Image (cartoon, rainbow, N blue to C red; front, side, top):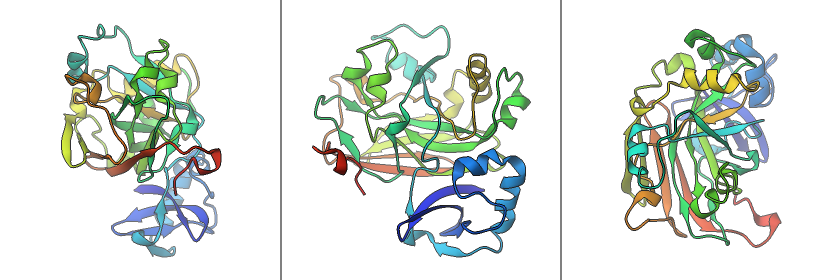
Length: 295
């Protein structure tokens, strides 16, 4: 099942994508009105959404605006140095991490799958990182074992972990360089775990202006996604709607000689097998808060 958040006629709702149509779940008895609430309702809620998809109102997908599937996650975390190929390409800059190295992306960076991304006025070192993202579906702490971690997973989505490299190196946490507004596009929907049983064998590719820059596979991941959930829940509780970006394969602009960063007008497309793609245009950062989110 593909779960999406969409806007139509000024109203933002959730739905189920089937082919070139989206099933509007708004007003269906027993189904919450937003994605986090739907995930919090657990298997019964997801089953109700699946059944409603056979009878509820359908709309042409082309008639709606797809939003980030989780508009307001409680947490948005990213894993650094998690692909073997990426570790090799950045070896000249840093030693391979000995443990899972997580950083925080402030949730205000969440952006839609096809929305514009801002080139900051304070830096010209904007880079792309195509990534598979886990969407958490259940509350959990001290999760142990593959089965338990899978039970916490609602599904997967596509992420571009846009990074301002100059600001990323200001502190060991990397948070500032990972959290500029608009720098966390996700989508175009959540593919539920039952429809994507082997998340560790998916093609992941990134293009810039039609040029293939990243051509990887999730089989390169050093850690299985279930191990990532185990690691994080050792420290804190994961909650429904949390987003975990699992890292990026080789091909980032910062690793090129000389580095090749993004410029205004560039279009970045990230596609993951079995899920779909997101595509974002780089634009100048607006000068006013009111215009900070391009529609």
